[in-house]
Length: 159
Image 1 (tube, one colour):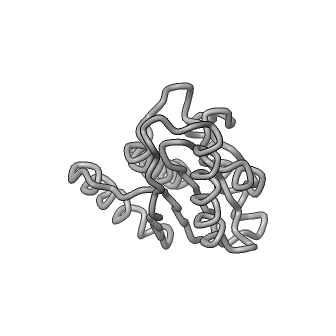
Image 2: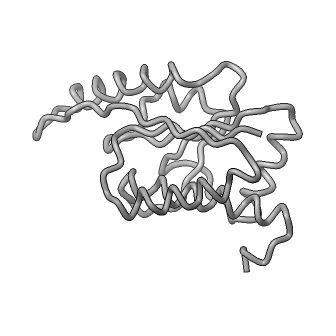
């Protein structure tokens, strides 16, 4: 199985880079993992709704270019389905058994995701109603992916 993580914006904070590097290393024994960082559009300070929609659309085009036709796509959005870690682990197993070789996760920029990317998704997932910086969400997501694999292995990591 291959895991692809498409994110908008550069990761700047060393502690986040270190955490992501650690979980990427741990995940490498279960899966090939690819992290794709895309350029985020600059948002004017008092951007209109129309300007925000244009920005999300531009970012959406960049995201869409990185999604392969046979990818199982999971987008992270606040309105998505919330899953316990065990259910998330089970979902990853189901996707793999269904014949998908790549699961692509998408984390949008500070404005969110273009509706066309949400439509392309096979699943929309939420980590709750809290708003988290999209850079921090990368670390949380990659840890949960690692946790899902450990649950599948019956590892005590999850306890």
